[in-house]
Image (cartoon, rainbow, N blue to C red; front, side, top):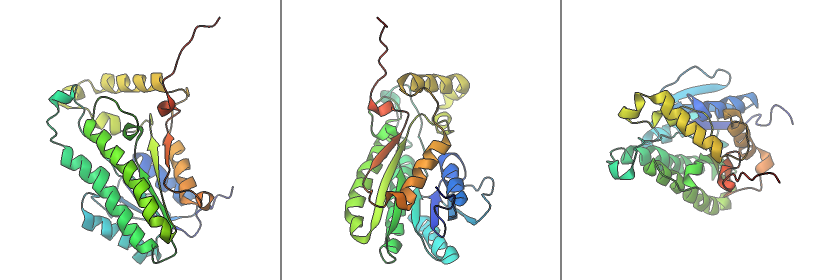
Length: 263
């Protein structure tokens, strides 16, 4: 496969200052794309054919400005990656959850994805189509305890992605979702509440240990694994693929690991 799979294409990636978003942006740049990176804070510059736009995706006007920057700076928009997301606060029990972060989580994780999809599609519909990729989570597929608002938001992204894919197919716009799981980024530690933050190392390791027990594949998932999947959806290899949700989770949502004694 050529290392310029996205040569000549223009991509927007939200939440691109770090974590999964930065990994995706870097991979797209390496494959020849021009990238507009949106995030609250810039972080280390991406370099190459990229520009940074300060963006709060829960503000629809800022999302519109991000898309407009891609068109004005690079002359078009072929790929939209709605990656920006927040976890919310993890409480020991749902009964203790004051839901104080509900509007923030939904604003970033759901409204941001919907606005990004809409604004990108408005341009793509008039210019031959394109690819839109939304980042959800295995937490939106698989029920479980903790961070209930986050789980609800990621489930909403899945349903929205499939619905948008149906409607936008008429314009040759593909809409797909990636559901990462067990990928080591800062999002787990950011979900700790004030009490747990005092023992953050223990807290995060407990979460990671549970993830490892639930994952059939033994190796750890990486940001690069997610970026590889994003590249597939962004490029021409997936030209007949839309409305899908791809878990990148080492088999976690396929089912629990069963350990049996050897006979």
